[in-house]
Image 1 (tube, helix red, strand yellow):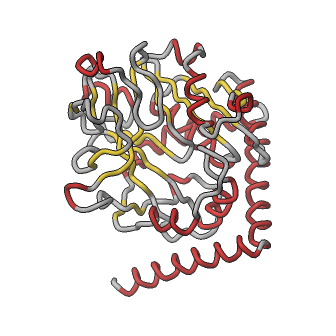
Image 2: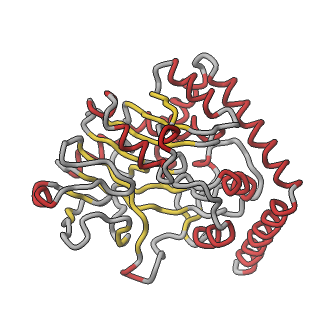
Length: 334
């Protein structure tokens, strides 16, 4: 089974190797990665990985058209590449998203064996908050962040989260963020499953979905979404801006929306050994450790620069105060 992941990145250097190692370990065969306007060593690290034959790295083709939908331009172009065309399935995910397989031995094959034949497999986000982590630490995210909002996104059985999807490579299934585009004539010819293997119906009224009710949909797979990381790394994320356009995110609103730390989730640790083995292998390739270390140093330097900026320091103080308050409240409830 050949599985290709397509991703877009900008200034994500310190986090690339863990993400890549994880998905290679669980069974992803090929990667198409687009980058743009990187200043932290991301481009050079991706080039080194391309030179080693680990990924296919390209400049985001949006540089030619200057659309405000740069991620969708990249996904449309990916269809023309051999890594996409020769795959059985393709997933469009971000570097802060980890496909977390709970089935069997934690590999995609184990999940596929349990689910059976499908054309589209959508997995719900499980969003991880700051979890009390303020300072940037280059150790794996999967060893640092365990606190999530659980299934409480919305209210009760109506709770929903965003989805990302793995889809079969077919002429009538076109890549798009969250859920592929499918023409009406194919609605009844597409087997669509959720992360528990339940079969879902494609509605003519709403053929594409960005979100799904989350209850009982994450038994076999979920998408661990390390959307905030540490408070310090969130400063860099805010400074970088939104991948869909060119504006910076509304930082406080965004952090408040995602920083829920109600339920502990350590399920991804089941794959920690195979992930660490693959990480060590990647670090042993020519120039990989060099550019990884440079990206970590530049990430730290950018944090320091933002902390010297009045607005950056104000954002840090606001978020750090919230995290300290959460810690105090948690301790008081014990």
